Image (cartoon, rainbow, N blue to C red):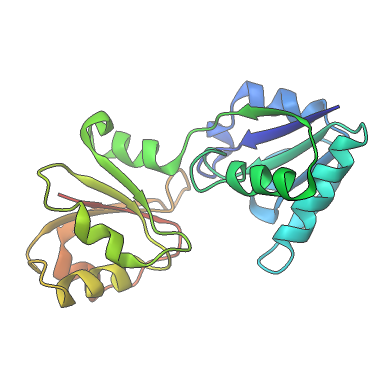
Length: 208
């Protein structure tokens, strides 16, 4: 039938779109992390993703969709940006499976970060470090535009890397932490302050 790749937004139920809810409601199987599955109260068969089983569970979801089930794989933010779209494409190519894939876009933490900072993001560089080395930042941060970053681990590690590689510790930075949650924090600080602070893993970093 259909394999929906559903963007669930940054975390709060307020940012789950009607289209996302509709796709999940039509599904026989719903796949996602515990955090995103909690956003949908449909009584469906569910598979919970964790750090150890993602590849295997996604392959199972793709196979079941290819055999006629309607499946939703839920991604935080938007499926096309550090989400499930890329791994699902790779799985279909690897297994030589054709499935009717429909992407349901979601509101990403990048978008919400830009909104909180009143930052027009059409003129910003956007970079994800998930699963990548920090050295990609050095190629873009001095081009005169803000750089919006999804850090790979923690903003303090990224700040340490930048300072070590010659970036001014006084450089203006913004950190948006746990966006959309009740304990959300938006901080406008210096790079050196990021280096010496602790943050949760749910952060977006902006370098001005």
